[in-house]
Length: 179
Image (cartoon, rainbow, N blue to C red):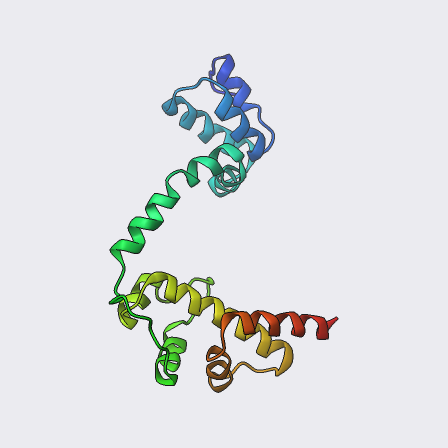
């Protein structure tokens, strides 16, 4: 049995997919409280979950643009807040690279164990410096896997001592060898 909905709410309730639901929820004039009420019944009726709605919402152009509003300002503020460098260029010694490799582990869900700002504080540098090292690490791991097999700490150190552009060229070569 369908609960009592007005015509706008019925249109939303009759959506077939989360994508369609998100589209209708943006175009129909329904107050947020009533929208939540309709959503609860719609989820029960269709068998979809809130995760399905979040997934559809994150892919909708309107919500993508909303999410991106102010990102440049937030990134600048974040860089200023977490600038632990003293202004000089950081020279990565072998010991520092080994320490970085040990701190740069990923968890089972794919996220890093330590956030970039935590590593920046640990190494007394900037967030872009950590992001640079993470890019190099990811490239080095791919190169080693494609050419040498097992990724070891020793091999990683050797590759991380190289420049980012050198690693990019090596990645291109590794890709062409695979084909």
